[in-house]
Image 1 (tube, chains in turn purple, cyan):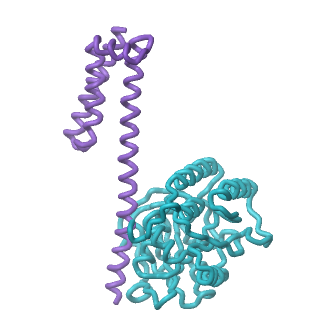
Image 2 (cartoon, one colour; image 1 turned 90 degrees about the vertical axis):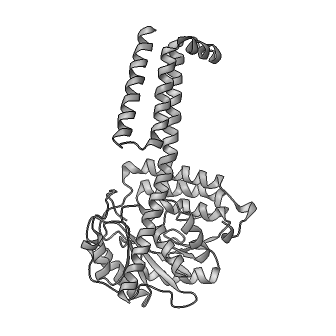
Image 3 (cartoon, helix red, strand yellow; image 1 turned 30 degrees about the vertical axis):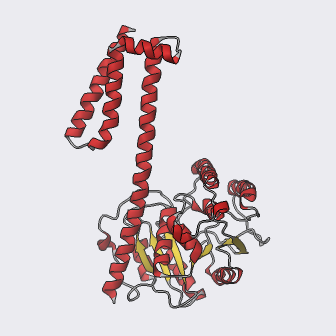
Length: 115
Length: 271
C-alpha cells in the first residue's frame, strides 16, 4: 500500500512539474493547464493524506484503499478527457466555420477584383 | 469526393491559381435562380467532363466547384473548365465542403441549389427534372434516386445491404419510405439552404441531412435518376470505413431525432 501511495506521489509530482514547464514554454495555454494541475494536485494530496483517502474509501463503500485511489484517479482523468472532448468539439466547429468564412470572403474579394 | 482523406492546408493558394473565369463571380439572375454546386476533393480526372456535361445539359447555369483543398490540380481543372471556384483553405471533409457551397449560395440569394458529385457518377441530364420537381412540388429537397424506379441500377453487395438497412431505420423517422438515402445527387430550395447553412452534418452527410430536414418537418421527394460508374478516383468509403460509417451515421440520426423540433416549430428568422 505504501509503495502504491509513494508511486502515486511521484507520478503526481512529475505531472505537476511537466504541466508547469509546458505552460512556461507555452506548449499548453494556461486556461487548459488548470484541469491538469487540479488533477495532479488532487492525486498528490490523496496519496499523502492517508486519513482523507480512508474517509473517501468508507464513504464510497469500497473494500480497500488502493482500489479507492485507482477509481478516484480514473474518475478524475475520465472527467478531464470528457472536458477536453467538449473543448475540441467547439474548436473544430469554430475552425470549420472560420475556414468556410475565409473561403467565402476570398471568393467575394476575387469576384470584386475581376469586375 | 474521392479519397484519401488527408488534412492538408492550402499553404499558398495563390500559387495554384489557374486562369480566371467569369467576371465578378456568380450572381442569381432573377427569381427562381439556381446554382449547380460540385464538391470536389482530388477529382482532377473527372471534373472537367462533369462541368462540361453540366454546361451541355443546363446551358447558362452557374456552376460552383467547391475545392476541399485538393492535393492534385482539381482547382486548376475547375477554373479551366469555366466553373467558379470556392477554394477552402484546408480540408474539411464532404459535409463542411458542401455546407460552404450552401452558405455562399444562400448569401448570394439563389433560390435553388443542385448538388452534383465531382466524380462523374451523377448524370447532369437529370438536373432539369430535379429542378422541375423542386419548383412544382414545393418540397424542400429532391433526391436523385437510383432506386425510385426499377431502372436496372445496381450497386455492390455491401453497399446495397447498407442502403437497405438505412431505408429500414429511416422509414419510421421520416414517416415515408426513402429509396436512395445515400444519394448525393440532391436539389434543395431556399428554406433548406437556410437550414443547411446553419446545421449540416460534417461527415457522410446524406442520410443525416434527411433527418435534419425532418427536424423542421420539411419535406423531400425522390425522382428516378441514372447513376454512372465514377469516371476517376475512388470512393472515400472503403471496406474498412464501412463499419465506422454505419455507427457514425446511426449516431448522427439518433442525435438528430433527439433534436426534433416539429412540435414547436420555430420560424427560421428566430433562430
